[in-house]
Image (cartoon, rainbow, N blue to C red; front, side, top):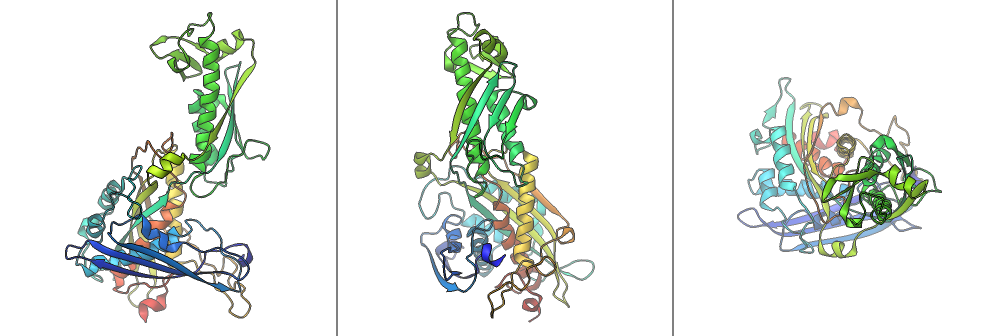
Length: 468
């Protein structure tokens, strides 16, 4: 898999200044990365320092070398995953240097506006994420000094935390909606579902937009002859295609309302397009919900078998210019380390995330689980080893390329923090597919330090780093 994309290696250097009260006075984050000799992809790792912590002086920079390898490409949370593990480790180290609890230090340097731009956040419930995750985890009893906790079997125990963030991205998408004279509806968009449950969430948005029960909606997706739903990536698929579906539903309902309010035979006559609402396969007058009729009645009286509408999803340039749009979260990790052999086990993870409106809590929680597990994998397991003679990957199989199994993640808890965002898009949706990686890897690294007193400087953390 070397020639078809991989996460780029990085070497990162952070410098921080703090005043006597533990407030950041300067933050400098430099990342050196690599690309191939024949193409361009440069991991924007230092950009992770743009958005999280308040400081009057922030500088980020990148440089790169070219290697005789395949070109790196977008891996989940490109830039944020690699950058945040370095940033969160450095923030933890700065907190210890100030004699402060890591959570207290983060709250002391909480960014009320986006640090690099000064823009207000469209919404930001990070304080509540910190509170809920810390309470659930039991963080208040954590000692500041490392290497003070052991379990009943003598294993070194450490607690660490990390802040999670990912931008709320939208692309371009289209959808087509149809209402039929039999009272059913159709929603079409060429969305892909790779297992994240997108089609379930889209069907829910479609049913809501059409004012129908979900069993009455024929949701069609996954084919290239359907309207373009944009890419399933960037944690922007639900927001992008979801807005196209929402707008398509609104368009067909508006056309149906025009038929009814302009028909003297309808109880909705004269109400105007804005004077009706759709619910349960019926249109109602807003000022008198006792007056209404079914979609089937409206279409049948008009002599139509169906009516259709089209919708698009796209970012709003004015809103993009006015607001900083991000999802946020906090992850707390417990690790246990064998004091003799240096073997590390993650025994608990608790994450709390605020990502706007949640369409389907079960699917969202599953996405958080996947991200948090990948964060564990980033910190402790995954490493592609390159043969320096040939440039080929030496461990190109799942026997030698390590990923977590069930025994590596015995307890994972994801908390969904309520957050209303009227600015990110009309549905208030942010992305959840990648944010779980960004806080977790740093939390695990910081827990390893708290258990052992050894600050990890390379990842995955190696046994020899702890025993050396």
